[in-house]
Image (cartoon, rainbow, N blue to C red):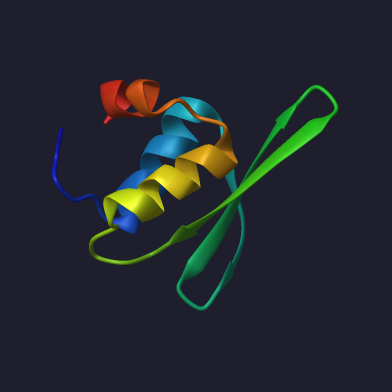
Length: 74
């Protein structure tokens, strides 16, 4: 498990492996969305060089992605 991941890497993994797509960007924060049946799941990813563990955990919680599944795909 890498100690630090960049925001760009997290966005890439969420889009390629978990079906999210780019919606918008405001400043250094990117909004990603995924549709499952009638539900929309939205998460916000800060585009920083290094995301802290707590920030990453929050992004994954909003995205409804299990942390173990995420680390398997990285």
